[in-house]
Length: 472
Image (cartoon, rainbow, N blue to C red):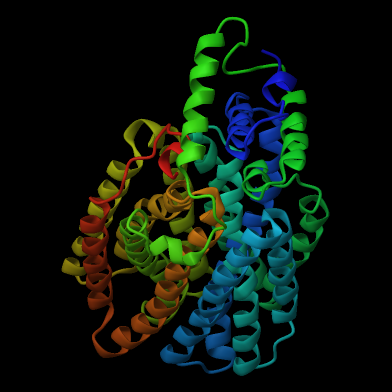
């Protein structure tokens, strides 16, 4: 059976045409075509992470320069995440209507332009407003990219392929930490925002040339365009998972299974209301709690550490920034381990174990009273690194549990809870730190991991299953 024969559409129903297109996607192993898309999207995600964390390495300077108190620091961190809530919802909706590539391109343009504008902020209110606007772009980029990369992937090895792509996010955080520890003391805080913004605009030149998601095109009934994208995929490599001559019977069986799934699926346009249907409501509630609890811990720790080292432990500026960078070095290593093992261990077991280990480390730190900066550097950084694998894994898991017709909006709405948690956490840390001290801050984070641990037991396992099988 040749590819053009599989793609033949004359006399076929929409369900049959969609099934044949999906089979062709699944039948091409990961190759350079996938890698190119992963690199371009990954570059945007890299600077998304860089821009998200850049403020943390600017704040130790601004605290002295603008005479900021703990509450103002918390609100300045929260501004970006508040914008991300709006960005995740708006761009998720836009990606379902206009396509993945246009949606993410506009988000990256806004994110990068506002980063450059932040470099020229002259006071607290101006920087607050610009970080809010930048957050709208930051919040829209990652969930759409997650949906896009998932939709290009085949079932076998999707976890490893995606997590290796998502590894670029902790690398972006790591780069922000390393660049921040050098650029801010040497050249000044404004250059930190320029480093994050200018390359993002250059990436747009490559991003707008990416092919649209063929799964999205097929779901919108644009079969000819989907066929053209898949033909480009097929022409990029001679390799196939199933050989038409040798595996004819299995090909027919898989095609029929895909047709059955398409015929039984909901033939309507995606709507946020479907996320609360009997099928998807339990999934929706579980991922919302997982996003909120994991990011309350992760971003609460990561955004405050440079300032904690500077204001609580009174370390020199450069040492504070370098110690904060340890967190992101450990996180990058942990995400690499996750990429290699997640398909074997499974999404649910990995997530539960991470909440358990991270919570134990944070509880130990609280019990010790967090008396020294090195206890924080070792235990809090390790807890963040472990939790960081879950925050990355959720970008894989959430698009898996929703169908193509609402994958971007479902992922965007779910990630809005990480933005809410990330906006709330810095403010709460500032209040608790002032009222109760540093030990209670880490006890609060440990309590949040308990919520995530209990919720992870209700995850469904998605490893090595086709997206259409998981989410009809």
